[in-house]
Image (cartoon, rainbow, N blue to C red; front, side):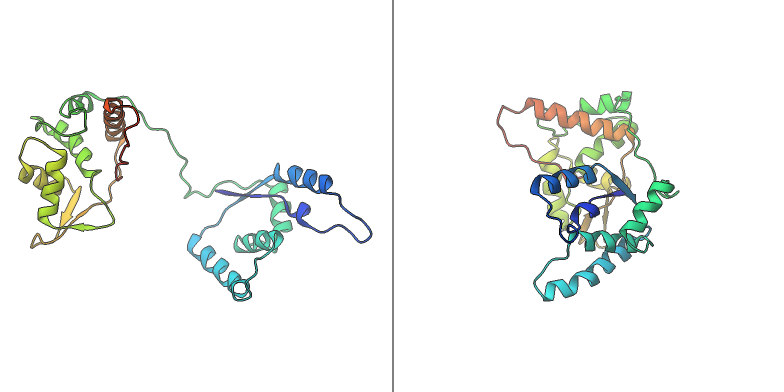
Length: 232
């Protein structure tokens, strides 16, 4: 959900014969901005396309649309005649989120027994120092390696091995590479010429583990040390 600030009234010019003072305009703008109008659009791609078409004449003329024009464009994209119609509709019947909108739910940050065990397999720099015996712990620990890969590029097998050896110190990159594939955290071509990071969504257990590992690693760094943001 997005909101449109009801500032159209403040953007309108004063009536003929009336000179709006700067304080008055500022006050009107502030009062208008306090009223937010809910804005829903079913097709974001269509909205972007419509806005692009509307902007083209202004781009050619090296000008910018007014605040009111922008509000009207957005309102029409949502199926209303103009912004005033959208605002009136919202005032009479506040819209409810579409069924496809899933509310954000805070995840449980409590570490499970397996996540707690996985944490102990890493050193203070966030490197995996030993291979866990239990598969349930292995499954959690492998996400720490997964987040080190960049989803925007592909890797050769040699590059995968080098990255694994950077973040795992016990010298068995072949096992770790194979498990990343088996757990569908990485994928590769049949001839192993290219590897890439698979887009995966971590569950609550893994998210809590990754957060705890990140906090533990950052606490071990000296004050003022630059921290590299993990690829997620």
